[in-house]
Length: 430
Image (cartoon, rainbow, N blue to C red; front, side, top):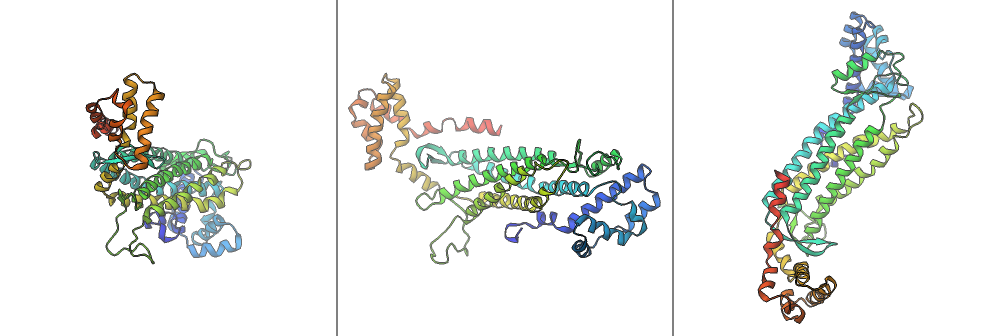
């Protein structure tokens, strides 16, 4: 990943140095297990653990010749270990090392991502509580609907990200597996106890049935969840972007003193962070399909998944971490304009009470069809001419015949629309 969209801690997980170190750890654990079960002498194990080192540049040199990364790695180990290197990689296949390493790298990445997601959830909780009673107009199809609160908007996002958090924990458990089962997963040349030993030492589950590889439905499950998480990030980003529009301005990204919005127009304050997150979400989501296609491999294994994973694994996890971290900063520093929210509420001319008037007329004995026609007629005049909805209703004979002015006043009480907000919060935050 390019540095612009990467954070150092998670980038290091996917650095070749970390990968080779994990490979080495796995190979040594296999040797320990084989020693435990009488396959490697004590002296050889001691020598292997003492001398087993790798040189990344030397591995690259060897790979140019042999065209195989694991063989290049093992050759480099042999150069350092000497004769006892014959005990290394005994009875296992490359994918035993590669796949177990991938499980560890993913797990290491999730150990960074999961706490970051928790921070985002906490910020959403804070802002939802702070603005629990901050009234604003709700919109459907982008059009004025009925009043809600900004806090309730954010509470919905809090619940959405909390669901992703729970899914991600399950995905982490599901992907944390080890396979040391040999060329086609039969343990023909390696004692099954070796896999159990390595799994336990690396805090992984032991794969129940592998072929030559760990089944790719495990990886696809994780990437699907990351795709959902990315869509939630985009969902929140779009909400903020819409609220920052010049004609709305109910909320906006923090704009620092020296920040510039446009090279041409000095007045611009653009929602660049959430626009950026919308774009990143597309990449993360786009990587879900290749992960699903990687499930379908020939027989016990082919290599068609390998090139895909070398790209999408680091890219998706690094971008997910970056996106979550950036969204946390956006929410934490979000500027909420209560005055604009009130102003936009007033712009509706009270039209958000149309359903209440409709229901009151039905309650008074009118058919729903007749009531709808009466209310819609007044609403359209209000919409087109900018007149107060309540005044038009007061002048409408068919309304006056059924609803008194006192009842109309009660219908237009704004507090009605938020009377159940506390119940929603109690249910979510209990």
